[in-house]
Image (cartoon, rainbow, N blue to C red; front, top):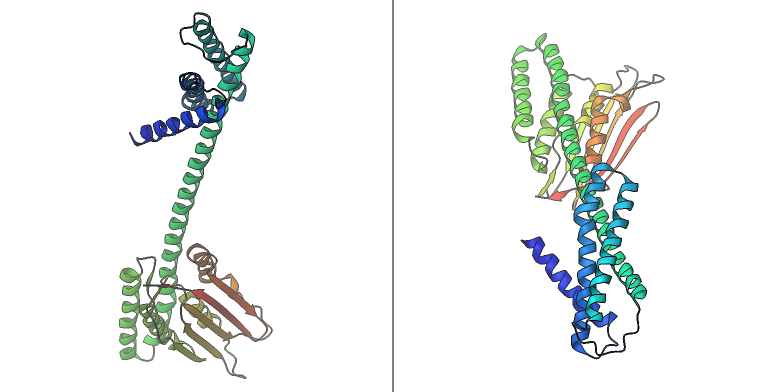
Length: 337
């Protein structure tokens, strides 16, 4: 019903516009309305013949020659039919003509032909435009669905990866400190509970993510001899962030930190919040003269993809590596809760 009303109002407005533009030179109001009605009705017939019949058939069969032939036939039938009807009206003066009409029948046929052509081209172009818009909407919907599916898959990948490393830490601790291992086990359970129940949303409060990172950092620090520091400066935490977004960087630092007795092994993590901008810095020392595979880890690849999916044009990620260290700089624009 809504579409019918939209089309009706459009053609009503088109009729009065055609009346004013095409027949402005006719002083008699009755003749102007009469000829405008003939022209617009011809355009409407041509338009909907293409819009509702020929173009849908073309989209189904994808035969351009068939479309052109059918359009030409439809054009000829409309132009010839309307010219014949108008000839009868003019010959028998069924409608009084109050201006000097000097066209012959051939002129009348040409006139109807070009007016019908306006309707056919209008119907074809509008149907093509609407089809293109609908196709783009479907592509956008499919792309969004694929992005959500990919994002769900990436988040799911983080859980077993983290669990594997944490259980390794717990296994090592069981050999020398059973009471502390029980505390560690409780910490692991809290972290997994966070992942299972807090991370189902696309975004979570930044304060909860900071608590998770601190617990995770303290858990991972148990299994390393490196000097590890975590500094969080955030006065306003009334923001939200994608869950588990920063954790792969920290996990990567602990995984690849150097283990050299002849120098200091360092893990340094700094997080600073300025207005809605999150500045994240993570650095770990690496083994000298040994190629590292930091950039090839599953976690880093996941976080790159998540940033592209959830923060397009809202992040800057720089990863640098040399013989002695590996560092990550991430600037991220966050949204308010």
